[in-house]
Amino acid sequence: MQGNQELLTIKSISQLMRYLGQPTPLHPLIALVNYNTMPAEKFEKGQKISIDFYKISFKTQFSGQVKYGQGHYDFEEGGLAFLKLRQVVVSSYDMDSYEGYVLYFHPDFIRSYPLANAILQYGFFSYDVSEALFLSAREKEVIADLFGTIAAELENNIDNFSQDVLVSQIELLLNYSNRFYNRQFITRKAVNHDIVVRFEKLLQEYFKGEDALKTGLPTVQYLSQKLQLSPRYLSDMLRSVTGLNTQQHIQNHVIEEAKNLLSTTALSVAEVAYKLGFEHPQSFHKLFKRKTALSPLEFRQSFN
Image (cartoon, rainbow, N blue to C red; front, top):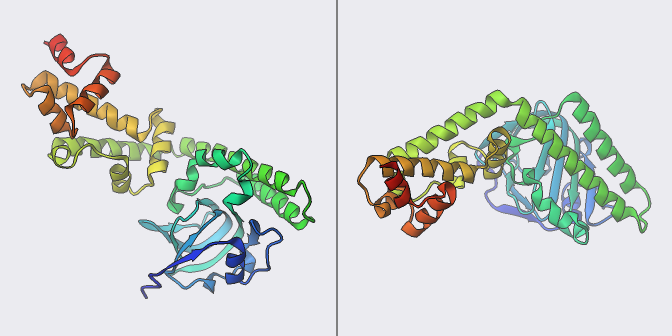
């Protein structure tokens, strides 16, 4: 079965609740749903779905797989996954059962609060589901308590303080998620080290052939796609392990390649720039000077 290839776009939380057979939300811009009350078969298998609001999914237990981007993710261990506005997901062909909660909130709900701008800093909204946050038993308790507090607030009668309280609770949930993601980067050192090794090998192979000359400098998107990771996750992981993000690693590798060419070949500075994938030699000159405090020609002369 190929599934429905047409994109289902859901504009409002009320529309989604109707689609899922859920009660009308007490607040039109935010809703919390227990997965036990939301049958998986509500969505046609293979249906492409896009929502115009944020989604935070807390699965305490799960049996089955979710297709996302380049592969499938097994949620057997449970965890947190985040979805930003208008991010396309595909409903699963193999979704047996899962437990937990899902929080939906519209950007208008936080628009007049500092979180409206700060939410862009939570990079995990740009991660793939395959890069979900795995939680320890203690972390699950913390997240479960936060979801319980949000649920209790939503069940209260709405008053002048409701939105302030809920926005602060969402922000607390995001801050804890930031902390736990940082822990995950640290505790998965072996896996991350393997990714770093593969990343460095990709860069070496890129410059070893004619890829740079033909297609230009390697991009973050190109490298993350080769590693089957989202660009943001790759950068955050590299920064956690090495202190440098993906773009900084690319630039450092370019400089090392440039130093090698300048010191071992008779290529002109412009020829070196083109060989490395720069469209304009001036851009190469500017980057080299910023990284080494020397111009390419000064480096060659000092080396000689």
